Length: 79
Length: 290
Picture 1: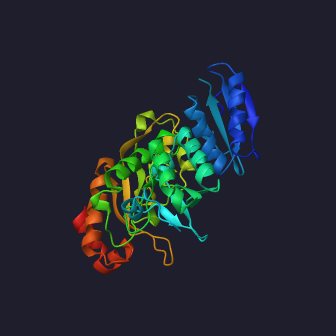
Picture 2: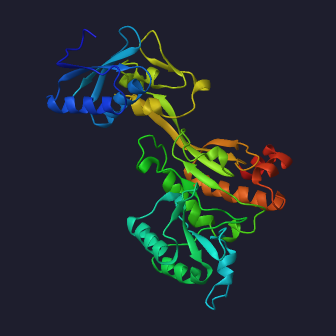
Picture 3: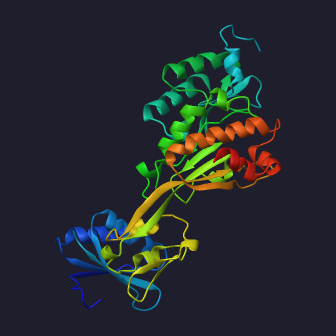
């Protein structure tokens, strides 16, 4: 993940769908175009749904990885 | 119970009027293809229900609406008022039933095909038409927009669901791996070169990889319908059997027409299509339909 700068971060572990997406969307709205947002998401529905919804909103997912344990870390570039 | 002079007995025989347990009361079943209706129509149904019925409605499991508690003497007046507003009466009995569908690709983020439009087309083509009348038993058709199969295509006499075949454009892949974690079937694994590998036998053509791919490296190679025949619920439930994958959506009406012909030719009175297929054979149905 070191290849991507991160401007802001959200830890959404334990947050259910669709609240996790809404929180991501609100955070992205505060940010500037081109900024990178790091989001931590649980496995299962959150990792399957949130990136897809973010894409449908027109943003770019730069990277997905699984640092340790049962969660994922994604980096979003705001469009 | 006196018979009103204006009652249309021929119309009663086509169904849509259901005798209730209470003496002299009927429920009027409306035709609501794919469960989709304008708000003005719904208001009109409410008006008629309050004027002629008990004011209660029943939403049927096949997406229809029934106006409850209409006295026999008022049926014709209620029907006239509904029909003047553009509302139509539904069916019961051994006929091609009102087609159901999910909202499909027009509305649903999971939609792969426009199931609602296909359902309306099938309803227009077969409902109340000679091809869909005088059948051995009821005949139910549904269209699902994706592989989630919300309207239960495998529980209908003929059912369809949308499907897509994905194709990877490696140059556009950034190796993020989201398709691997999104694929519920475990059909995608990331290779050592950070490119995803799809295992064809595990793929159910749901299109989740295409929808989730941030760079659109996964693209739709082809879109089609999976078709099932012979499903039913009732006393002896049985799931429909697969007829084919990747039928072009425009061919769906021909498939239904061919299955209806098979059912009319081979079905015994009172048996559902699934029973006919079990007797005559799926291979024979496929031979005549595909």
